[in-house]
Length: 233
Image (cartoon, rainbow, N blue to C red; front, side, top):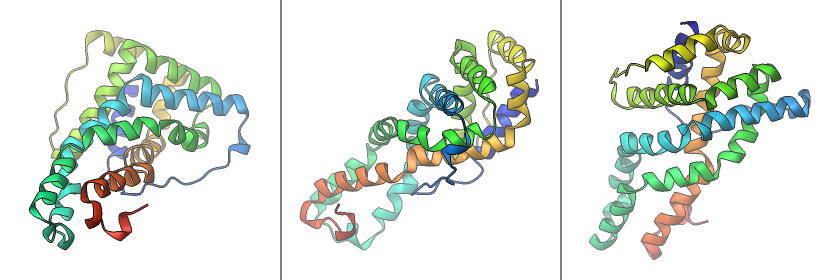
């Protein structure tokens, strides 16, 4: 099961370092690749982020598991301590229900993230391999396989739990069949490089400036005149 192992490696590398608050990806020129090659890279990223449900599910899951890392510095800040009790309560209520906001903004920003990362993915796989990987991701078995791997990886990073559910027989059979294809072998060979791309992709998807700016705007609406000057757009 080389492909299964490769997917686990990619997921582990992707989660090896916490995502920064303002995610930036190394830039890479689109001019080095044919338009059809970049289109295949965009399609594969769309399959991974959108069609498998990975971005919709993991963006909400990540905040539910790690939202305290966002809340605690604010709750301990002099700004929060100095707020009137009513505004403290309102701001805390907003922060406690921030998951859907992160999810909404992550999905809204997905086309820009896909465009940003297409050249990096094109650098790893041929156009044919990209289209075959995307096709596998869109199968019921491939979709659930990738989604499970990512969500279990998010939980492992957030809680330290090594929970791993057993894939179904259909999923294992599909993964074994994909493993024998040229695209499956290419994915296995590039597992670590793909893991690095997935790390930056996840950081840009759920920690990019568009999300930070939305949260600051919302919190300023809650705080009104008490909003810190640096948060105002």
